[in-house]
Image (tube, rainbow, N blue to C red):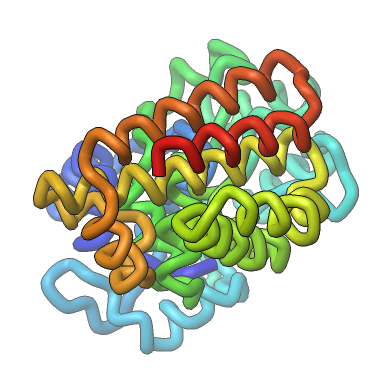
Length: 334
């Protein structure tokens, strides 16, 4: 998991950061927090960041140093006073035994300091028995303990647990934040930008970036746009030979159409001097070349046809038939 700073998190989750940093500075942390919100919004990273902040030996301007013994052990999951509970491999639930282990650990004095933290991931996956066991602990917290519960589905937790925690809601990330996070995780900028625009979701975008099919699919969309500029015949032969075999399901074909839509939207954006919204940034030369040949009206016409093709796919029309229709119609306006 990529580590994150308070500064970076603040650009994505301003309210959460304000609450937590204010509480740390004033030594007024609640005994239990429920970090809730969609997957990929930084909840786990925030929990580890808070733990590092509280245990760091050399903090700088409120940021943990990341290099001291405590920071490194928290990052690697080896700090004796920071206990993480999560789903065991291939398990569907967090069981009562895992919570019992947690309670036993917290019955001991802190090994190295007066603080002890537990981080419970996927809290909604607890069995009812596990929730009831945890409830007793949250109702009667030990001095110096901090509970951080993480969930993407708060409504599945017991109301009594929710009411005993301070709830911090993480909002969905912007496409730009998703792109930046993927880039920091060493995904190519071009793939990250396209994946974020397609999914508007970190987990989905990350999965696409790691899928070799997606990189090839994106390349083929660019090639299709180039052939469409030549002739319908060139585009049709490409559809038969390469495009359809690659986009071999309705779901993948929808993704292909969305990427093609981005291409013509990028051309329109350049016409309107909105280069900051361009998705295919790495294809600047190809876009500029087509910009000289296509008017705003033609770009809008192409987008309308692609949206109509998408509606046909949604109506379960055969994918290849839809692409044949689209290529011929696009040839007519391009």
